[in-house]
Image 1 (cartoon, rainbow, N blue to C red):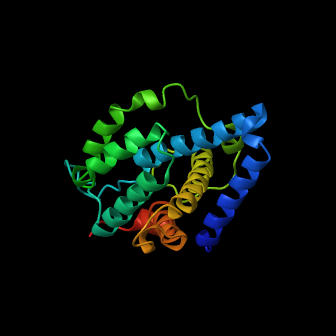
Image 2 (image 1 turned 180 degrees about the vertical axis):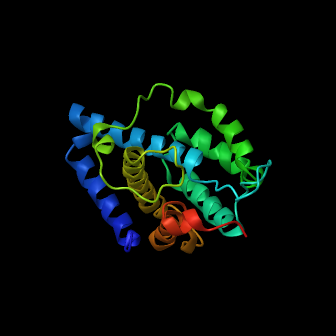
Image 3 (image 1 turned 45 degrees about the vertical axis):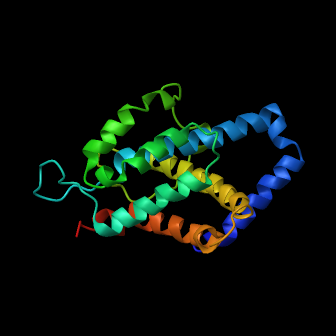
Length: 212
């Protein structure tokens, strides 16, 4: 997490080397690539369901889990980054665009997010779960939801890092094409957004921070 900017450039280099070696054209390479995208998508969905909203103690009404101003800003930038950096042909874009287009309602509470997720159930209905690689992972971050097991969190965190890898490659590739203000799409800026997302939505600090 401490040097995500360098990681973005390194991930892009690794991806180009893999392509030059025809790794993605082999059956094994194709399966591995599919696992990466599948794990990343499942973890993105898992985060939307379990990590975005924090209920306010003593408040049990619609909007009681509205995002704080800080979480709104970080979540909005995270979704914008995914919209811009992820491969345009990936079906996950449909869900990301729906969340992005409904951002004003999404940040007001989980009700709108649940409605959006119900419109995209077909994206995940054929996926039984995380790959063996992520399902057997042992790392993880602070639990936000008591109903989520440590094994699920380890698998989820594994998938989030795969999502970061995909984003890193997309940022490096897209940055070559953009004219104008490159600061917004530089590896450093993307790294800052990913670091902020981890700190706010995947840490004990973010889990314990109350809306303000």
